[in-house]
Length: 166
Image 1 (cartoon, rainbow, N blue to C red):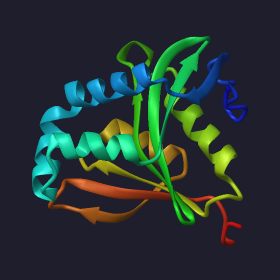
Image 2 (image 1 turned 90 degrees about the horizontal axis):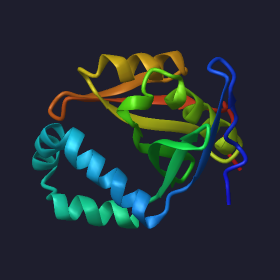
Image 3 (image 1 turned 45 degrees about the vertical axis):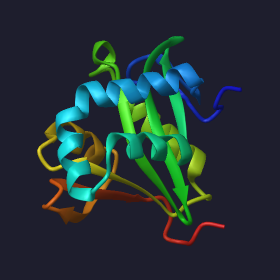
Image 4 (image 1 turned 180 degrees about the horizontal axis):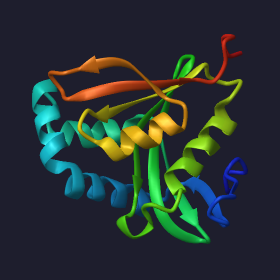
């Protein structure tokens, strides 16, 4: 079943669709995280006392992974988890050949549309030196709410409502 909340990425003129990831797609996202983020994640996981095996188990048990398609082609993935009145974005990953096309922004807007009225806030952690991601999140209305210098991360949040979600 396709996520009806994904929408036209009007600025790019491309159809962005999000749907639950298959088992193969979930494994692909884990592989991409290991490949592209390994050095950075190794340090963070070490500080948190978490092994790759434990991280993989957490990934399998927590939240939902969705596949993002642009014009019908897999363009990326995101991993989310609803926690009480908030939605935590564990990861958003756009495949390199699709970056710079507005896909991540369209996926974030889709999440907002889907979860408005269900959660009060969307939160995420971003590496302090990831200027491109921080710029994207800032343009999307996220603000830095906390800094975890020991992990090299900033916690960013976007309020979806001033009223608590139902």
